[in-house]
Image 1 (cartoon, rainbow, N blue to C red):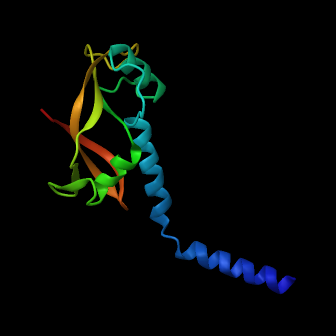
Image 2 (cartoon, helix red, strand yellow):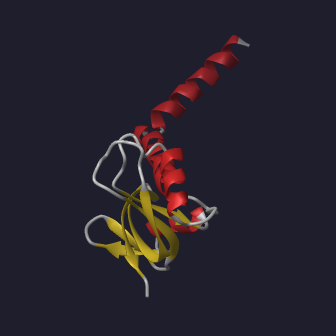
Length: 146
């Protein structure tokens, strides 16, 4: 019994030592990316939507100047970091092969103090992301798709 427990602890500790320490960090950065920029099924895409989402995602203290929400399937966003839905773009960035439905929220007025008022712009855009370990971790820009 004691030998089994010792063997289990040895295997467990070896597993911890072999797990890359950045993996947990990268997963948290990906979750942060989704929190800031992903809304699968938006309820409206107008100014009120922007004000509500920016507040809900904690982007209003101080008021963030601009933020883009990507709508649709998160697997398609993740696929930008591979060849399935992405191409290299500039240095260390990837651009989506297909456009995404997005809502961009722009702060109205110059004050970064709440209450924050936003103007919504809805459309389809190709998006540019930075990736780490095949996961998007930063939305660099969105490019209008006519």
